[in-house]
Length: 463
Image (cartoon, rainbow, N blue to C red; front, side, top):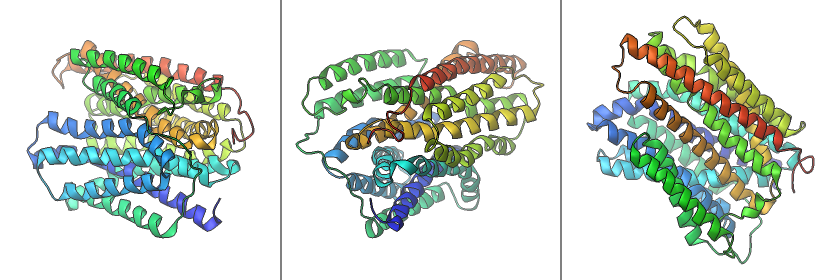
């Protein structure tokens, strides 16, 4: 452990980076329509601008977590910051669509390196007794980024252009990079005699690519084929990992470790159940309630703002209270919020929607920090990088599956009905009610997984 001042700097830098990436993502979503006009790009291209970032972020977290074991997690983290920042700057300098897609892929690649090591750096820096508080502060910075992104991003786009968003994110990323280089020395326990598992990395990236891209293009038949292919690649991956001397993922960390395994299962199912909420409520408020996009944006801010305010409190409690109690309460509150949404109709009062968003946000705030603490406390120090990468990977898979379920349901229940017609609105409400019923069921499964993790092996996990 370093000095208190140095540890505080590490927390500040990692939290600033977390804020930067989440801010960049949420503000960019607002700028996509303006970018499309400025770049004269079609909808398919702009969809790829979002998708390619998600794919890169998901595919490379675990491989680079392993590389950070073999080399040094500070080097991997710095490399991620450099790639992310420089690719943001280069976006400002070009209007070539193909190059922009490559740069967006590089941003996701840089983000993957950051996600693969950031939580591990915090876990290795701070004592077990305050890890929950530290994770809570870091996670809170993520939700403040999500909360302020649409507001500040909107101002940037209005007074400058969409390129201003990339200038801001690049500047914040560069600041983190400089501070980390000149102010902080990050130490870690090195794993000796480890070799990188290239074939395992290939099977892993193919599994993630086919799974996530398959879900992104549903209900296209190619999507189902890709998802089937991901199952085959995952079988190859598991078969290989159980036989290679230095596997990409030490599968033994899941074996006979119910605490760690169920924490990850809780994560993927909970993200699946709640990710689509903002998308669905946005459609409902604009199409059924006829609210303006600006007003809807302020309504939707209530959920991430609630998450940001509660996350540090949830993290602090996780240092004192059994993790499964907090995470289970969090998932149950999430289920209550989803239950209210099941009954949405044209006459649903706005205060009820706000109440549900706040309940869900509070639930997620109580869930996220303690669950992160569970995952990081459930393994030995030498597996911190892998655990850190799993947190981001489970989140990405859950988010993608959530939107995949929405896409399939809309395709079946709404089809090609003309937007704005009475029939469309009726089908939209029915589809939203159906989806929230499905997500409620998944959330209840998540609550069961949460409780089934059992107690920590020690007060602070495995050390």
